[in-house]
Image (cartoon, helix red, strand yellow):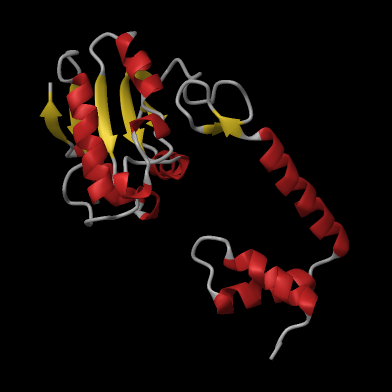
Length: 201
């Protein structure tokens, strides 16, 4: 039995594809959308298309930007020898909201996961190696979740740089097991950075 009109059903299907949106939230969002003015919806639809068209990975770190190089990589006041290695660009936003990290980032866009056929060549590791080769006294902060995939990726990165005189640290283990970085509060993130543990130097 079809409870919703076809047009509403399509909206519900769209919202349910978004992370963290279930049936009830999808219904609330769809009904709220229908009540909004046409000109506002038209403006939002243009904004969505523009974001999709103009945003792409930074040529240096992989973070989302509308230019070739993102604002963080282009900032001379950041410590470019201190690179925080993260799974995806959502984590960049989390660290930047915390506001106390003054280094730069490297976005892997995934983690090594043999079970899902995600190998070393499928994530943004080769560009990290090239970045590090051109730095003096680099430090990598591995800010990856403590899952099997995160640990596998951490161990692989350690192995890559063990003969390259690279200091490697990781966020403190006070983080919840398997926690997504972008869901952590700013205080927890700050403390995890401050108490990071050296695992290779």
